[in-house]
Length: 374
Ligand SMILES: *Cc1c(COP(=O)(O)O)cnc(C)c1O
Image 1 (tube, protein in one colour):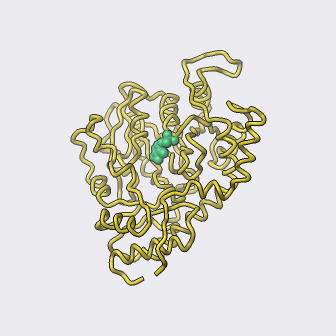
Image 2: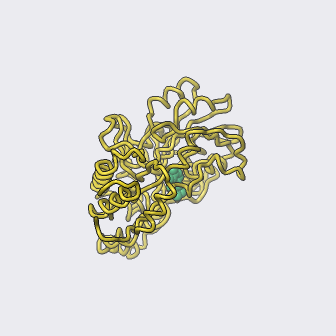
Image 3: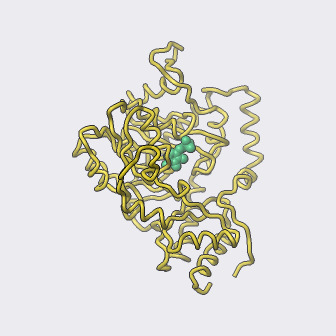
């Protein structure tokens, strides 16, 4: 067994230290040019992001939450409409629906922990305007199943792909299936900036035109205000940092997938755990492991044991799926899979700062907890 060590869930300083010189140059370059708002670095990043995702338009906005409600506004979701989304998501997804005046309707997850198409269909009403799958943990939902339901009921698909950048379903990128998709560049996300940032992507020219106006005070390229708009721009500084990090994005994902392989190899046979799908488990899915979220028996005890041995874990959304926030008016919403999942779910460290020895150490501790020899 390894000697004891201390493994943070996410190591922000280490991530910066790896590229300190280059990142400092990027930041200084922007400051020396005094290029802060809607400058060429943003335009370049947007172009590269669109290329990476295989989508026509990408727009940087202030954060991943704004991205969702700006997107909803651009496609015309508003008062009186309902939007179906999984309860296994960040409150931001539901809040974005709320703030365009529509009603968030929460559906259950399937055995893959993603929005369950059958559950989504049960919640369709004449008011349903859109289904919003959340591409959680760096995996894309079974979009064929969701699209079939959307087609059958003539509702839109819009995607919260805050956690999904780089993941694919049948070779199509998360965020590019519906009328729009959103990405978050929160520092701990797959592609993280030095603060808040987000993007909306779309293949629809009309939606793109609205987004450009909505994020910048409703001003067109001549500076004339043609609609009511907001200030929700991605800082040029953040865009430059993101554009730099985009260069190693594929390498980072390769590393994350390798870490997932290691967890799979060491923990896959343990009956006390249900792991996320292994990287090559299903050829339709390309997963990028934004998070490594598993189900564990005696979850809270395991978590305390790992903590005691220096391994920091997290229970996603602080342990509460959206439908359990009764204060927000969600009453009598019955989602048995989600309820059960949230008594069992746990996220192990998953990031590019982890060494192979770190992973081994984490797995050793889990084996020891459940009484397996190491
Ligand atoms: C991070 C996240 C968001 C919000 O993104 P911010 O950039 O923090 O506003 C929305 N939805 C999901 C699923 C997320 O993980």
